[in-house]
Image (cartoon, rainbow, N blue to C red; front, side, top):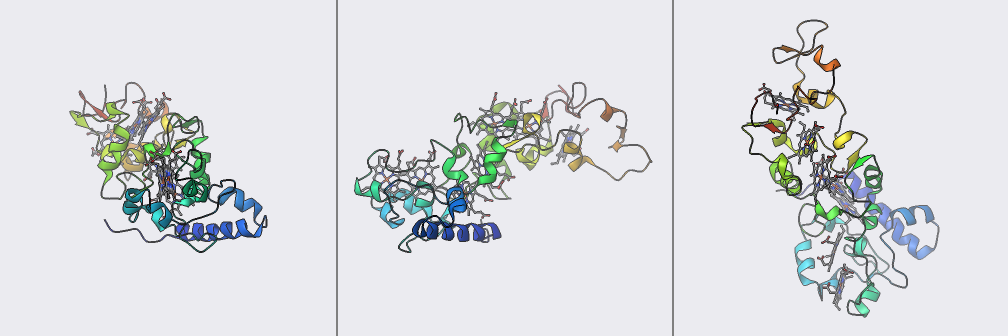
Length: 262
Ligand code: HEC
Ligand code: HEC
Ligand code: HEC
Ligand code: HEC
Ligand code: HEC
Ligand code: HEC
Ligand code: HEC
């Protein structure tokens, strides 16, 4: 898998981080950006750089090279690479105490460290239908690997079934095998669900037939009619969603009907 190009968003974040680090030294000039976008802070601690972590966490540092977040070569007070500390906060107290408890941030316990840079995700998780991350029942790391490879587990366009496996370990009933599988599932659970949260029931990316017509829309031949395949759906879609009872309620796959019914 080839590494993704350094995107515009990454470069923007690096600049923001640079500002945030400068803000730490210059006082409160950037107070708004600093509180929202700076790496987590730890009272009385300063940056020591990622190399300092290798002494005791050699394995994490060793495999971090290809990780999405290893591209974060933000600069700390003394111009070191503070990649590890961008999520864990400045490490001097932790290192000086040889790893004493409560001297470093562990983002497993709270998503706040991630929100420092992915602020939009806080918004998604606050929507009415969302995975229970804000309540602490789930963690970002149930689906994302901060230390190795692609942060999106199984991520990468060529690897959609691997990405689905992340979901299926907690939602096995969507796995099948089905006698009549819905090919849409091969395209990825995220074609229909936003994994973080949406305003729609079941975290669907759309609440009506738009969800299905993203793939099933066809050029219409008769005016005023909605043909899907050879079947006229014009009156059906006024009665409910495509996955309402009596229609295609077995939307992930069916054991009994090629039209995806139970
Ligand atoms: C002198 C050794 C030493 C160094 C250097 C060190 N650590 Fe640790 N670290 C430890 C020990 C010991 C623990 C507690 C035992 C464990 O979980 O492995 C620990 C635990 C941690 C934890 C888990 C804390 C928790 O509350 O769950 C994190 C995160 C961490 N270290 C990050 C870092 C980072 C980032 C650096 C570099 C800035 C670093 N460590 C440098 C020794 C060290
Ligand atoms: C993208 C944010 C991020 C970055 C960057 C990051 N970590 Fe972590 N780290 C985490 C999260 C999240 C956890 C909790 C993992 C979990 O849920 O099991 C963690 C856990 C740890 C732990 C506790 C032991 C463990 O594996 O659970 C250590 C030690 C650690 N990180 C060291 C490092 C070191 C060293 C670096 C730099 C090479 C680093 N981290 C970079 C997010 C990050
Ligand atoms: C210091 C800022 C910072 C922190 C803290 C941070 N990230 Fe990131 N993260 C980034 C940047 C920058 C990128 C790269 C964005 C890009 O390539 O478009 C990124 C990329 C990602 C991606 C992959 C995006 C993609 O399109 O491949 C995921 C997933 C992710 N981060 C999750 C997390 C999680 C989970 C945490 C907390 C454990 C976290 N991040 C903490 C800055 C951060
Ligand atoms: C239930 C699994 C799951 C959880 C929990 C989760 N994510 Fe994600 N996240 C995904 C998947 C899957 C994708 C890829 C989406 C896609 O390809 O459209 C993704 C994409 C991302 C991206 C990159 C694309 C984007 O939308 O910007 C970021 C950044 C990200 N997640 C951050 C986070 C953070 C931060 C948390 C915790 C607060 C988190 N995620 C929790 C599954 C999850
Ligand atoms: C670590 C376990 C875990 C993983 C991984 C996970 N989920 Fe979930 N999922 C949950 C929990 C817990 C709920 C909340 C269930 C509830 O509120 O009753 C949930 C709820 C849902 C719901 C709404 C269910 C309902 O009845 O309202 C959907 C849809 C969903 N997840 C899809 C996904 C997708 C897609 C992925 C992969 C990107 C995924 N999940 C990954 C644990 C997980
Ligand atoms: C073609 C769109 C589509 C795809 C792809 C898809 N889902 Fe769904 N999913 C739905 C719809 C629509 C519902 C709502 C069904 C209902 O309310 O009866 C749903 C409901 C769910 C639910 C709630 C429980 C239930 O069955 O009502 C979970 C959990 C879920 N999906 C997980 C997944 C997982 C995991 C994947 C990937 C393996 C996936 N979905 C792929 C459309 C899809
Ligand atoms: C990511 C694309 C995609 C999405 C989104 C999608 N489908 Fe499909 N669907 C397919 C493909 C591909 C097939 C198999 C080829 C075909 O029959 O058109 C299929 C087949 C079907 C079939 C079986 C047709 C037959 O008689 O053989 C039904 C029924 C169906 N889809 C309903 C739905 C419903 C309902 C939704 C919305 C919840 C939906 N699809 C969303 C791609 C998709």
